[in-house]
Image (cartoon, rainbow, N blue to C red):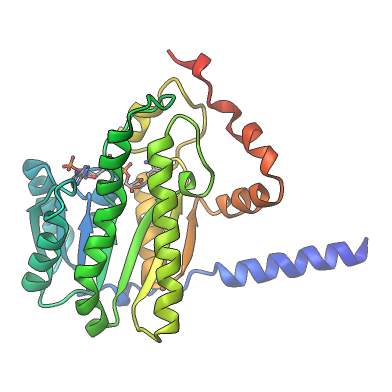
Length: 285
Ligand SMILES: NC(=O)c1ccc[n+]([C@@H]2O[C@H](COP(=O)([O-])OP(=O)(O)OC[C@H]3O[C@@H](n4cnc5c(N)ncnc54)[C@H](OP(=O)(O)O)[C@@H]3O)[C@@H](O)[C@H]2O)c1
């Protein structure tokens, strides 16, 4: 018994050491940041946090008026420099265009924050393979295009790529087959990139952020009637993403306990259906 208690204490101590908050706000003060999908939700909240830390920010999404509003608030919150540009990541030309604009306007880049996500329904897969293809462009291919375009600038600044992923990229999730596929692709691609960059002794870091359910307007609208799971605050999620990127963590979880959800799923895969038992078609309003 004593052995188990000691082992538990040792693991807990190691975990709290690994997950201690090493974030230094100075590391993002004046930093040149490009945030995608920042006209609403988690991206918008990240823009506000970066602004409070005094970063130089460019935000992008499709809706011009929404971007303008976010930018105005960022200026009030203390952004050193604040710009916005529209871009549609379903257009294969836009990812590179947006990055080029940001690098030119900011005179380089320290953080590329890839966060945008295309619209998809929460439902049993409706056999629409064209939707899978177009969602792949928005949620995944555009991420790789922006990364390719930004790498030279990030190599110059020893910068960071922050990828906003999901528990749906760790556990294949029902009702969101196209979405979950894009997030698995993202985790695979950027996980491979981490290894390749390490092998090349690159000074660029890649942080993959795994999020649980977050209370953004779009997420809450979509899961209504499908899930009784607790949703966590977008502002806190946004801050944890910024911290993970600034401290160059390879992978981080918000809420933190989802690290264990994934661990348990890997050991006991059959438990997934129990975990997701709150998701039921029958619960639909
Ligand atoms: N909320 C959650 O529960 C949750 C959980 C796990 C992971 N995540 C991840 O967190 C990230 C943000 O999610 P969120 O809930 O904040 O989403 P959201 O509120 O729906 O925001 C999505 C953003 O992406 C932009 N966007 C959508 N389609 C686009 C396109 N074709 N081209 C360019 N921009 C586009 C939207 O702006 P426009 O409409 O103006 O283009 C918006 O700014 C996503 O990567 C998502 O997968 C969220």
